[in-house]
Length: 422
Image (tube, rainbow, N blue to C red; front, top):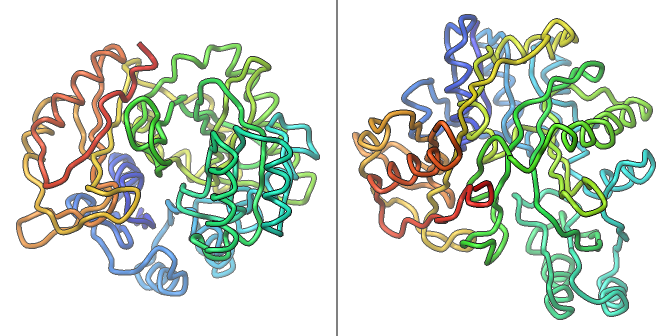
């Protein structure tokens, strides 16, 4: 089969890496790809949001299945356009991807179908939002309605911080139209977990649990990022907690969408807070998580491409159980200086080969590009260094040992990824 993966980050590198291992895969393309992906797939210079360009390429190259990585393409309706053209594609349609593209849609759906989540209120007027913040006090959470690259959520510890977030989103428009409407919700406390499932809207196959680390600095300090690292499995997700998440969050959401006339086919990601009152939904994503995918896929022994095809064809019931490596996996993100704010680019990266020769290590490229024989930085999150070990502790040690062999000017990474599991 000829496969096209859409996207350019470490998540897409992990998808390409895993799909390339399938017995069904003959040739793999990635658009636009990155410096690391180019070593295992043919990278095509088409942006992930250029749907007409991707469609034209898929037709010309007789692509058998397109796999969508980033949320923007899904929210723009890439799945609808490909299916209209009679092309096979893995991912939810635009109406289903709205679960991520609009936090308001997501929260209203959860309220309607009794999916546990934080109490919330919706605002389209900044002054009304600020008055409400003064009334409820802090801590509280301010969320932009639309897509903001994982940065549209502010967990405000003080009233002034919350009001400033409203100003930035609604008046300064730092996220453009994504901040025209916002949600203000109660601040949930507890440990977070990421639960990813693959569904054809009838059957659900769960992936291994993971825990993401959103803040840029150690001990969950500093601003939110797209994710600074993850580990799998999330030891806090016991079998009982997992069952509760599946019953009260995953199944209720998929069933609720079906009742609204929306078939959900693809990956559904639930960010969950394990509170003293039980698991509550923080957010939904309509695609593979980043960096969770980098910590989950190295543990997957089953053929991911087979699972994707079964999902696309509504035959997921034929996939009984996925087979998993018992070992733990830890992914640590190496970021550019300044991230998640303005960051530097075009810094040469050294030590990549030495890191991968450490054994049980894969370096997934996020923001890189190839320049001759060199690999240069080309994004905020640059690399996802990923290690497998017999325990979380062993995986942590292997991953950080590998990172010490890698260097680029201004390289920054957290030193505590996975520590909560020990």
